[in-house]
Length: 239
Image 1 (spheres, helix red, strand yellow):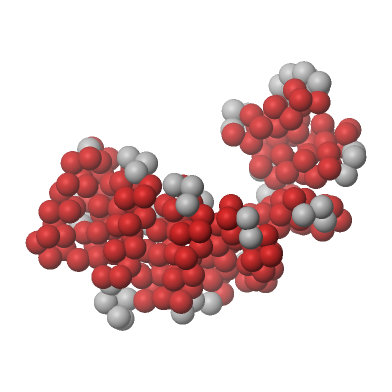
Image 2 (cartoon, rainbow, N blue to C red):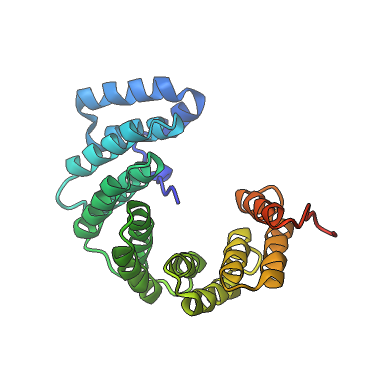
């Protein structure tokens, strides 16, 4: 969930420069910062690093931008910390991601759906960091704040499966499927839950649905790998 807010990237030409030449764009943004560009220049540099998948540098630039926002720009600061957290996650640094999401929650004084989405992000980071208790607490709050977001139910179902709470996993994946019936990721997780529960026919049906719903997607590829592992062979639509 890389929520990099390109629309807030300061100069009107910043995103155009990134699209044309992200390496040059980073150099330009850093020069702009030296001339007093402030947080907006830092964010532009961060986005240029994102385009290059230089995650640690992107996260650092987002964090610097967040620190350079004015006191009255709390929402902007929160958004920058969220972007930093997602960059840390993309760079496989979940502990630093948790810290960034913590800062986002404090900086923005957020409530409602905005807070719920950050709790979802922090849950992902906590799972990656191995803190399932913290991840569950985040997900419970996210489910309260953004109950219509299928990702919240999907992540909750996945965590429940990993914790061998299969009744909870089955209930939550059903809620995800109600909200996003054609999502291959939801079908993939439904298959994994069915497999964990010992229902091989249901698992195969769910994996086949993932492939049919979004052929070629990462979830579909994972579902095909599950079927191959089960000895089900190819599962292209129509077979």
